Length: 301
Image (tube, rainbow, N blue to C red):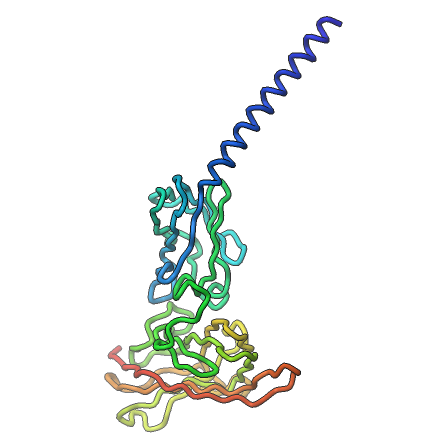
């Protein structure tokens, strides 16, 4: 009985010591967490390549102790642990850090979903910071970007987010394109600033009109529903729109459109949207809008 009593007392003291150590460690972590704070703040907190691949993300340590970033989530999906990359991910108090994301595999390509999704960083102590992708790039206060960079209407165009690609290749800056480029898809970015949903139709098109009549007729690319994430544009949401076809998608005999103009030809661009407003009672009201914008230069091959 004496041996049993001694054994039970030993186990009890051991358990109390473990419990005390655990409580002390939890208390220490909680005290540190109270001094820890990070923030994701736009504008210009995301750096992108011309092909819209995310290169870097800026995070601010607004707390009073050093933090270490251990996870990035986009739309609540785990993307990577930045501490595994070159340079690690420690941030001193009141400092900021550009997290290099070029090592992420597959690369993070910005699309409409990622623009409207929450980007979340988490420290090793569990402190989080979240912000919508679009607000990391532009104002960072939940408002639309500077209207001077947009065409203002039911649909606003982000002028400097304009790209093309050949077949399924990389995206390229849209202001120049080599002559003879095959199977071209154009990509533009719009935001619906109306208070109603806008449904766009496959007759909507992107048109190049030559300044020197070469070719004589306008060259249209029609919308590509296969690539668009949605054909219903919600209020205050960013959407990439894609144009591939030489005829509307619903027409027979359509094929990808090429660039067949002479080199050094300049063109005016026209975006023409057809569709409907969705009223509050569910009825549809006809919608149409044309957006002219800057020229495209045809370069040599």
